[in-house]
Image (tube, rainbow, N blue to C red; front, side, top):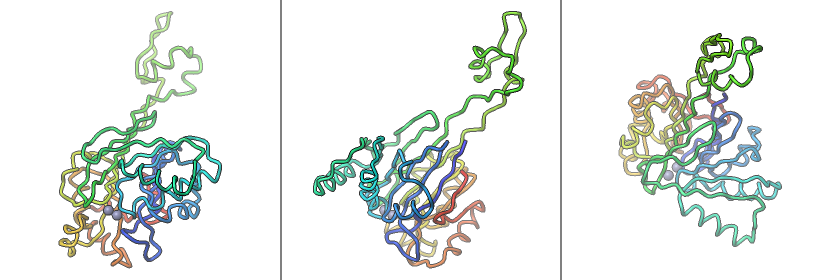
Length: 301
Ligand SMILES: [Zn+2]
Ligand SMILES: [Zn+2]
């Protein structure tokens, strides 16, 4: 099952050096989930050939503009482009108020159904679930309420081996897929392990948006295969990071290490860094499986 993320924005605060504010597109089994929607997200979707019509779910972490200023534009374009299928948005309560205000004053009545789901920034919980994955939210520690999201694939059923099950009545498929051995009316036993192969292990992706790296959210991200963690500054700027409730590249790496992740993606770079190698080197010294969030690049999770 496809489980990958494409980075659309990697900059903190303002667009600089061709870098855009935060946005990522998660593809899980060909369903598209947008995570944050900074200014410029629409242009980035076009640039990287991702059809916005395919987005069915949007997750916003907090109300600093670099994480949602692109949303009203995206929603308006969906309306203008004739979207009719519903869109589900997850985010802070005030976001709904902001969007409604913008629609009201532009006298826009959108044609599609917009389902808004308020996410409590103070309490962890499950916010969404479908047949592919479960999305849970967890509190981060930022200057304003901020939420992280964890996308966890569900355990899949075993897969039938086509050649082997050719003569097996369909009625037994469900049991075999669940890993149960089947006894036929004539007494023959079909061991599930002979007729099916194990499904891939479910994987998970934790998105840690803007936060002070204080460890309070470590339990929520523990065991994630891949973690995205903001790394706004180099560690030499720790005081500034603490002041602004952001993290350093070193801290992001320590968090990934402590959480037992396989891979780390860092991003949300300060505009003081024209090049990013120093941030990468600093994180890799602690957590070698670190990659930079680079716009347009797709990461297998
Ligand atoms: Zn930010
Ligand atoms: Zn912020």
